[in-house]
Image: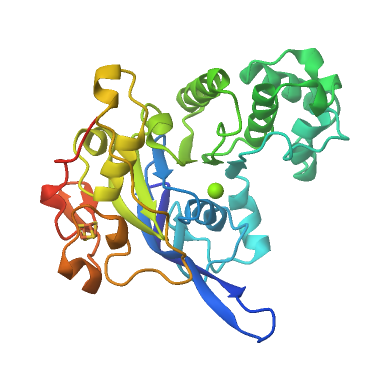
Length: 329
Ligand code: SF4
Ligand code: MG
C-alpha cells in the first residue's frame, strides 16, 4: 500500500540566546534532514536519548511547530505549505498522545467533557449522540461509563493516559503520534497501556509514530525502528533486523544499555561513554565519533551518509560492517 506518511528532508532550527549581554543567538539544528515513510496500519518506533530531536520531529509532523524546510506528505499531500484552513480537515486525521498524563488533561473539566471537546469543536456530535460516543470511547480504552462524570485528579496515571487516548480517538484519526506515552507511568502499568495501543491499532487500523528513549519498550510494538542522534536518523530498519543485527554503533550501544534479565549476561554490559554533545556545537564528521568505540581518523572528518546496507536497512556509519562485535545482548 502507498505510504500514509512520507517525511522528506525535514529541518528545524531553534535560535538560542547564548550570552545574556551580547545579542548573540546560536543555531541549534534540532531536526537536521530527517526522511522516512510510514505505511498505513504500521508502527514506526523513533528512539534516541533526550535532546536528539525525536519530539521535535513529532511536533513538526503534527504542525505544532513550523518546519524550516522539507516535506511532510500525508497521503501524498504536503502539509508544510498548507494554510490553517486547508490543514484543518487533514489535521483531524492526525492526533497526538503526550508523555505526561498529569498535565495534558484540563483539571477543571469532567472526563466526559474532555473526551467530547474535540467532537464539539469540530461540530461532529451533540446531545445524546455525543454522550453515547463518549461512553463508547471510554469503553474502547477500558474505562466505565460513569467515569465520564469524574475529574482527572480522581484517576491514576495509567487511567489518565487512557483518557488522553480516548480523547485522541474521538476524531477517528488515522495517524497517532505518541510521544513517550508511557514513560511517566509505573513499569507495571506501561505494558498495559502499550497493549491497549496495540489492540486499538488492530481494531481501528491506526498508524503509529511511537517516540521512546529506550529500545526495550518499543521492541514489541514497532514494525520498524528509526534511531536518532543529534537531529538525524542514524539507523532505520525493520524491528526484526535492527534488534538482530544493528548496523550503527549508537544502536548497538542503546541495545547494550537495555537491562538484561539473565544475570550471567549482565556483567558484559558496555556502557555508552560520555554525554550527548551540545547540539549547539556538534562534533565534526560523524557526530557520534567522540563516543564511538569503532571510530577512526576518517570519522572526525567525513560525515557518513545514511545509506542502504541491506534491502530496507539504512545506517549512517563508515564501518557498519564491523558493528556487532561489542554486542552483549
Ligand atoms: Fe563510529 Fe565512525 Fe561509524 Fe561514526 S562513522 S558511528 S564514528 S565508526
Ligand atoms: Mg522528548
